[in-house]
Image 1 (cartoon, protein in one colour):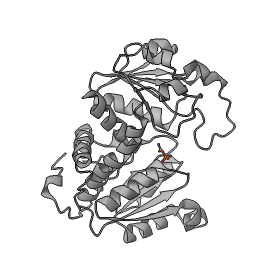
Image 2 (cartoon, rainbow, N blue to C red):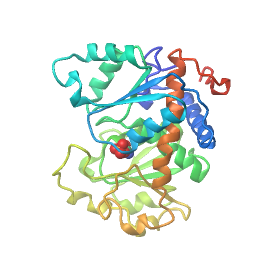
Image 3 (cartoon, helix red, strand yellow):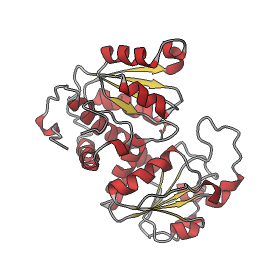
Image 4 (cartoon, rainbow, N blue to C red):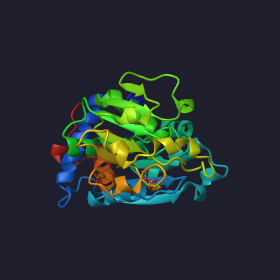
Length: 310
Ligand code: CP
């Protein structure tokens, strides 16, 4: 059960029962296995997608996820909606709820997203805020399971800046029971670190024995012009990869800024799984949508897609 109430919003990993998240991952594996014969479980259903920032992967993967499973999509830029003028969050949320069966929103302000969801009578999915990126991390968990067999007990090392993706990796460490070593400049070290998460100022120490090395851009959207010199020490290089397990993989949610947060040599190596990771946005989001829409009272035509109490 979603802690926010009966409507199955997908806003924040910490709002959702860990067993539900694990069941969504299982469904994502199953839906990926049906990539070429997708079940038509979203027939007659519509998803609105609203963006206040640019996107390639989130937009394409949600749109194709809905369409491959028989549903429809409507894409809107927030600045072309009346909410960019005088219309309230409450009125917009109520009206959107009357037209579509679910809404995915990329909205900078996490608080406004949650306010919007509070006024919706349909599921709302977080397509990334400045604080969190839960759909990305579900795809990342799917990728780690696919490549390494399991997540529990693994060591994941994060390098570079602190942002919405690292914040969500911190949440995921406890939920999925892996160890997260956070290697970022000392001034960015979080004040408190939950169980499963450690701080490692030295990137070499963080990389030692890691199963997964992960990074992201040093300049998130909206931070253009930011100084990046302090991050150079945290670039993921072949030398850093060499400190990790022989089977270690390199992950990045993309877009990549080569020779900034990651060296070309890592991108050219067999450890690089970023295109599989990007593809897995599609499969993870099919499963997230199936979970959200089922609880909303939608008739899902295939009994095998029953999540039960999970
Ligand atoms: N990783 C990610 O969210 O990509 P987009 O910004 O292209 O959607």
